Length: 462
Image 1 (cartoon, rainbow, N blue to C red):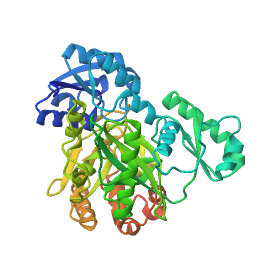
Image 2 (cartoon, one colour; image 1 turned 120 degrees about the horizontal axis):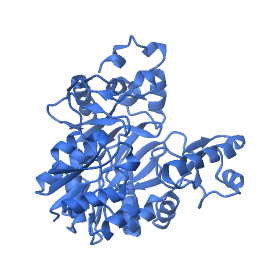
Image 3 (cartoon, helix red, strand yellow; image 1 turned 30 degrees about the vertical axis):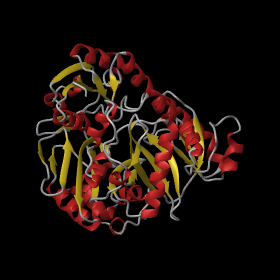
């Protein structure tokens, strides 16, 4: 087992890894930018090293600075968290060259599955259903390719995710301009402007399968997470199990994820994402070759610590459980992503000083956060400041518990998405699980209209 792990990340995920390492008897090293000098992960780690100015390109994406920090502190492994360098094959390779264990998949697997068109080809090879689309990257014959797929189509960046380089096109007249925009955005975000086309699935749900794979070829798949509630392709709320899944659909989706992992030679933990159509058909989207933001949902449903598992697998340990254990559903769990954003102003970012913070507690309530009274949320990074995760015996009870916990959640000094989450729970379509990936977008537009204006207490309380 490792003796000292450097966490190449910040905020709540850095704290999550620090806590797991402490429970496992492993020393930790935090890295931080100038903007994060007062962040809680810096205080909680055994050691902390400054790695550069506030911009991520000069700090959390600075491979040389991170590897130097690992060397001077004597770390023997690096945990990348999520975001930043977590899905960067070159960083994983650089860690290996520096004699460091990368707590994640091998660089070859990241390269295979991190590029969406390559991953899609592997999915086809594994017999996993894929959304109809182009079999390769778009070239000069893009109009012919689009007609072959059939309008409406989605333009997708071959590298990366998070909604970058993603465009919906309903008519041929808009295709050329939207391809150019998608390519420009993809080049800026991922340094890869290549794109491809997929058929638009009109009213899908977004469902994903957590996998864990050891170095001996053992692969297990956990119960699904439903990530349908999104805004601008960014997840807002996740739950497990999905209220739209049948046991048979779950088994088939898990089997598809396992087959893909095996054919790709995948190791460690990862997530295979799917679109679930209204008729029960599902289609492969992509693989996230890292720990997910929403991993606590699976932990609460399964009772298995994924960060412990991740670290153990990277150290060469075998999976300590099989598919039957991984498939157990012990509760219903819901995660609310609390962002420093103002729902009343189109979810505009709200960095600034946190004057007070009262966190919910009680049975079945888990909060992961790096904030505290007096902490200043910087403007340089992702707006996620906390994750509220609840579990209960049933979905109905989990919703009731979420209501109670969100009612106790009080952050003063900055705008947050807590009011939006409260509003979501009161909506009939959410309670009946009758919504698709477009629902949150429609709801967020509605929330800024007159009937949900500034006088609406459901949107004003923090």
